[in-house]
Image (cartoon, rainbow, N blue to C red; front, side, top):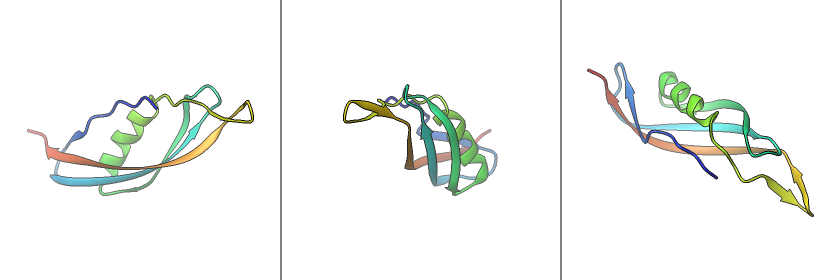
Length: 84
């Protein structure tokens, strides 16, 4: 999996460790086609991480030589800091 997201998220009014749980639909080409925020410490943080996850690229799931779409769950912890 290639994923690039900020491990530090800038927020308007929250500082501390934040958790985000996502459900991702990954197509047969490895691209994320849909992201659902299942849980987030703050909605703002969940939205920022979900936007980043839409650009992630996975190695496609293959079974018996056939590539399949997949639904996967991701749990992340990030450091949130207040913006100036």
